[in-house]
Length: 186
Image 1 (tube, helix red, strand yellow):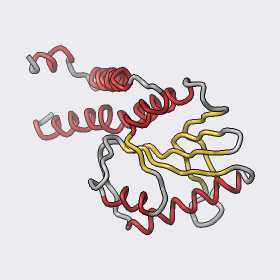
Image 2: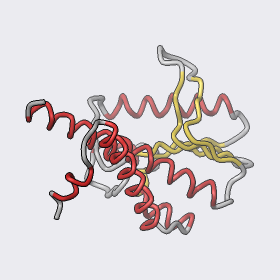
Image 3: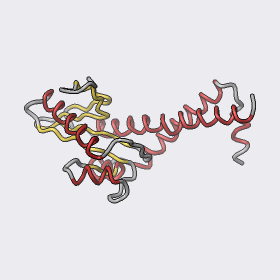
């Protein structure tokens, strides 16, 4: 294999198992922190909600909390940001999601909110736009600490450990020597 092909494979494995998979692991850790807090009646991960209009038929809510009088839908976002849609288009999506969740739970108040890793107001216009239009956006770490007493350092360590495990497994499955890779780090 030539150097270019090798480096593409290295990039694919590391990006897939650390960055992309890391977001999924992070979401699952958030879900577990909320569920295991015992503060809610029901907590679901990757909950499918039928949409009431449009071509798209289903919206998968990252974390759905159901309590006596309220349903909280959480859209969990990592550190990175990529969106080609306008703020208005994204806000209209959120409004559709809220109406669709409300149809499924007609007797409950519905809140659709975002968790954004390392969220700081004024940094990303889309999230400020959401806040300005009544859609809550929270810094993930701060929210979990303040509302659930989460040991965020431990959560982050579990995420990193799982990402490393997934990377190492993929690296070995691709036929590469893990020890030699780590030797370059010393």
